[in-house]
Amino acid sequence: MKNNKNLLAFVLLILTGAACRIFPMQPFGLMGFAPQLAMALFGGAIIRDKKWAFALPIFSMLLSDLVFEGLFRTGYVKTPGFYEGQGLNYLFLMAITFVGIAMRRITIPRIAGASIAAPVLFFLASNFATWAGHGGYNRPMTGSGLFQAYLDGVPFFYGSLAGTLFFSTVLFGVWYLMEAGSQRLSTSKA
Image 1: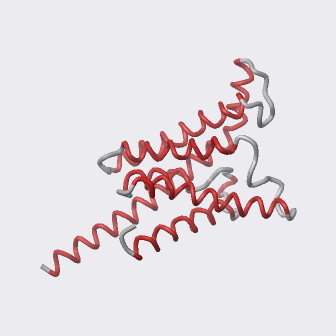
Image 2: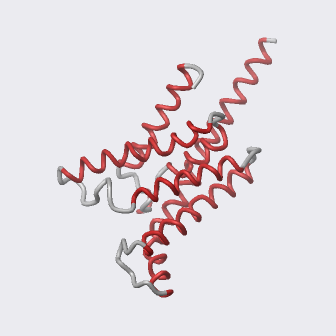
């Protein structure tokens, strides 16, 4: 981070992303409506220093998981912040950052494609890992058990897809408007 303005923007993104995941803002009952996949795409595509691109969604998710764990331990929520196999979700989130890096040129079709690919890839990987690790509803280690494990995750997939499309639109849209504004400002000074 080169200056305080970039650091402030980075911290605000992390705090906002964590807050969006914590507060019960599940529109239309969409479980999994959260910004972290969009943050991974955005970080991979926009942030030049890639260690910060990977850190952005991870710090946001970690902060929200810490809050969830505190709420769980005090009895306010039924779901813990930390659970067995969760480390894989962090790895899968980091992998989504590579999808953002692979965009290279930022265009609306590429953002839309990545915003659809990210939740699909996360859904496939995380539900397979849950099934293979005997997590979730502990489905049998058969083809039909794997299929059932994917069906178990469908409600979260819809929320994840909607959340990633929404938050990608916000993040990339605000970034575009800020870039366009700064270009207009620099040409008006010339």
